[in-house]
Length: 332
Image (cartoon, rainbow, N blue to C red; front, top):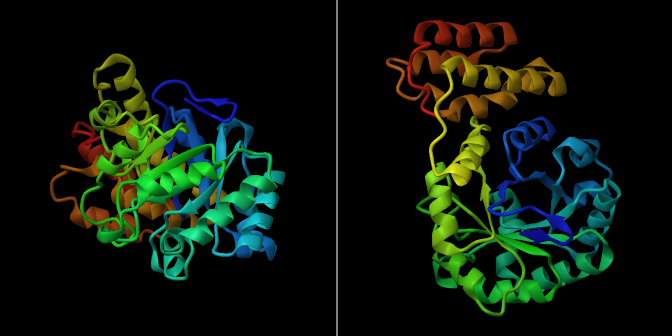
């Protein structure tokens, strides 16, 4: 599979863009575990052109994580074009346009998946960004606004005509947010449409290596994007890569191996954000990680872990889990 001149090989696996998740340290970790391409957090076009320092920090990409895409969102043509040009100065491999974020504060204001209610504007923004930059431009979107407006098959052709280099599709509508099951049938229809020639990347509910392989085979997509399945589990890319290459599940590592990765994430988060904010940032990973699944009477320990306010207290709780349950199943 190729995006522009970027050769991603066969069966590429992507780390999806996720706000407050895909910061530089997490991207690097996922890359080390085998992600073929990674995406930044969402970058607000309005905040970027206003030179907001916190937003500009999101443009900081490292050579070790390449190929990397910077993803932008917004609802007006000129700010989006200017933001794309600013992003290009950071030298990403790809500039991705977010037409898929369903959260109210973004979609409700017309950006992200909100653009699915204004297709002419979506296409104008896409065309103008493609014309304004030399970096390959891609789009990430959803099936449609709601069940009655699942327009992705026709929309994909229109976006392709705007000059994008690849299209990522999340198998839900905006109305679904993240509820219900992801529907890949329309993603498959887009991929199998004879008028489509750009790569199609599927996204939604891929949580196991076997599931990933089945979706490659059933829907014929060029690549698969992993989002929430990687939170608290960056090693999922290693597991998937092994399964795709061998057809076998990767044997589980000792419990302490997984725990040490989460501790490494915590340290990196604290180094970047300071102790208080760093611990708040890592809590999402600790709450979702599957490594504690199946440990008896774990509820109180989980609550204590998520309430820890210092790295000393957090690691003490995590080490106690290791000592008490070293031989437990990892649940990975």
